[in-house]
Image: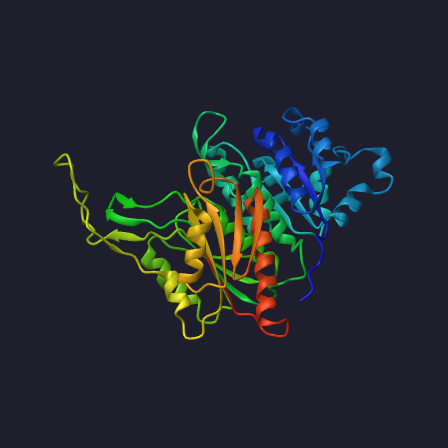
Length: 419
């Protein structure tokens, strides 16, 4: 199978007047890392939060902001940009710009481009949590989604006003990965037409109605893998444990809580799947019994009896006709040694090894990895998880065809307990 070079993707990035605009230089950098050409269009209020000078420096293109720029509009620039764009992204997207797009109003260059383009449009909302939860804003969100506009987020957390709730703009890496997945921006559809099941995030193993056992997995690596696979043309089902991440565009998401639920969901969809990517950090143990009521504090110590959770990796690799299998080894020490042992013990075709700890791996936007297979290895330096995921998907496809041959229909499994 031929592998193409990176194909440039044209992104019109609209920046509106929200405090989250300060994140946009980083967003531009991550889009360009992913192979995008970025043309920034700013509203007048956006210029109060971030300078055009900084944005021009990171984008490498003049900033556009004025619908009435005589020189630019002599060439019908708003139409030109609308046709140039492979995707239009507005980040941050304020409540006002959402309302304008819903109503079809076009008083400025950015909203005019939204009316004139046939490219996919994505909005990354950012506003006070009360504004986001206002019935008018929620009605606008529903209408935008009904019209096919992707709503990325918002996230939940502390806000500039000092309050906490839904309304934070998603982090730049997550937005960039989602936008690039809308375009299929790299490769030639290496997974086109294939069904792919991905598991991601942690699991929660209940102790009582208010407590559970879990781990530090954020699900970011698994979501990035799902996005990268979708960008390569796969039909992706993402079985996710409890995370605070926006659903990747074009991916069917199935929410689960426990290892038992993740096992059941995986086997519900795996029967006709060509590819299985299990990036979830599934709990190894769970409580033998779950209390019906909250356990009260009665003594200085408490014993909790645990039993093994179902082994999703073993259940897949023991199938009668096992697929090409890639494992992940997330370790705190002796990473390569333990990964090689797992490669042999689990009878894997490939394994992706990465270190996790307080300074790397879990709950971060970047990662590094070494991929091992029999008689070969490849190291990927630290990069955003979105970029790393795209490289891993491409390497997996390359190794698959090297082993199985270019004339075969792939059945490919990626197993991981990485974040």
